[in-house]
Structures are given as structure tokens and as C-alpha cells.
Length: 281
Ligand SMILES: Nc1ncnc2c1ncn2[C@@H]1O[C@H](COP(=O)(O)OP(=O)(O)O)[C@@H](O)[C@H]1O
Ligand SMILES: [Mg+2]
Image (spheres, helix red, strand yellow):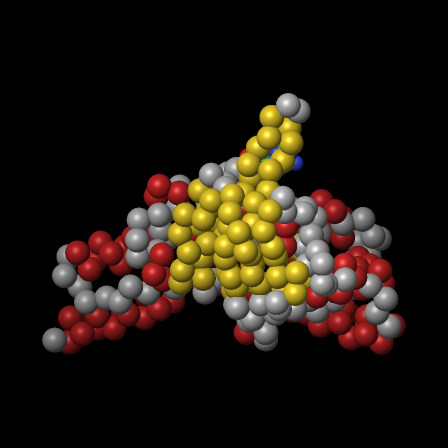
């Protein structure tokens, strides 16, 4: 499903004053796209997600999903069925007594049949890297933080949303958890889910996303392909390139013939190829 923001603005009232959280944002994500949203704290990233799933209504402009205005032409129920929202630290919202009940909760509310719930819960739990039989009856509270996060995400993807919104999904995870999480997101996207992910982590963005929206003080500062934007200086928006990209530009300056690959795996294969050539040549 495609997403389009047309000159969207939103102000929050805070006492007497109004905070302009988002100003005139025009932005699109294609069907099957994977868009990252980056920017400093307070730049309006979470506001974009809240607007997309209609938790907030814009003061101006339009938000369209597959060409339909989410406030005038798309019934709320349909929107809820098509869109999954993983809030920041979703593991704090777990409350059921078993993993399976937790994962089925959202589907129950959306009116899924028993058969659909059985099939989807198994798929989602296994997708998030668990053994279904071993984990289904475990209490979420007995799991580690990273495992609880995966259960929380399983409960969102179980209803098979066509659009998945994630707010800082990797914050607080260790590097190994982050890496396997990137693989899961990439695989969901390959299977056709359109993804919008807010993240502070350049490495995670470079490993997973195809396009990037950079916000600065509530406005679009830059938009484009991940590899193009990371070739430019993003520091004014508080964004540093991932270590592999820093190392690759350093080595290029030293004369090594390396592509501007943003994914670590691509950088490492190019580097190994060059090292091999130098050794053999
Ligand atoms: N509920 C709210 N009431 C008042 N101001 C808010 C509210 N939510 C966000 N803001 C303000 O709107 C701006 C953008 O916030 P947010 O979208 O949460 O930024 P980010 O996710 O990039 O950190 C900030 O200045 C923030 O303080
Ligand atoms: Mg935020």
C-alpha cells in the first residue's frame, strides 16, 4: 500500500503556546517501500507515525493510503486492519498471561476467525525467531527484554498488516539482537509489507531501509534513497554515518577502489575483494 503526505501540518497546544510539530510535509512511500525517518529528538518523527495511523489529525493537508484520504475516504476499521503500529518500547504494554494469548489479542479485537488466529500466531511467533511450541505457553514477563520486544512485535504483525510502522524498534537492544531484528524487518519487507521506521541508528537504517526522510525542526530537510543521502553530510540533522561507511570513505581517500555501499555486508565483500587483489597482484 502506498502512502502520501500532502502538505501536512500539525501543531500541539501546550498551555497558552502552540508547538508546530510538523510543517507542510509532502512525502511519499511506494507500495512495498521501506522508508526510514530520522532527525533529532523533537524533530517530528513520532508525529509522522501518529498522523499515519490516525492517532492525530492534521491541522492542514491530507494523508492518503493507496490514494484514499485516511480521514474522509478510509473507514477507521479498515485502516486499523491494514496498519500495524509498534510503539517505542512495546514490551511495556504486554499484559496477557501467555505468549500465545498476547499474540492473539489484537487479532481477536479485529474479528479474526479461530483458524486465522492459529495460523497467523504461529507464523508471527516463528517469524520473530521463536520455537512456537516451546514459547506459546510461557508468560511474557518471564522473558528477557529483547524477547519481550519480539513478542510485542509478533502481536502486531500477526494480523498481517500491509503497512508496518515502527518507532525506534531497536533502541535498547544489544548488537546481536539488533542484527537479527534487521534481518526480520528485511524479510517482512521482501514479502510485501510496506514499512515506515523511525530510528536514531544509522547502521540499522543502512541495513534495512530503501528510502530516508530526514526531518529538522518539524520540516522535511532531505528525502531520497538511503545510499544517496548517506553519501551527503547529514550531521546538521544530528546523523552520523555507520562505522563501515566511515571506514569505506577513509579507505577511498587513501586510494582504495571501493563502492559507496551502505550495507555492511556489501562493504566487507568489496573490501575482501580488494585485499585479495592486492595480495595476489
Ligand atoms: N502531546 C504533545 N503535546 C505537546 N507537544 C508535543 C506533544 N507531542 C509532541 N510534542 C512536541 O512536538 C514536537 C515533535 O515531537 P515528536 O514528533 O515526538 O518528535 P520526535 O519523535 O522526533 O522526538 C516536539 O517539540 C515535542 O515536544
Ligand atoms: Mg519520537
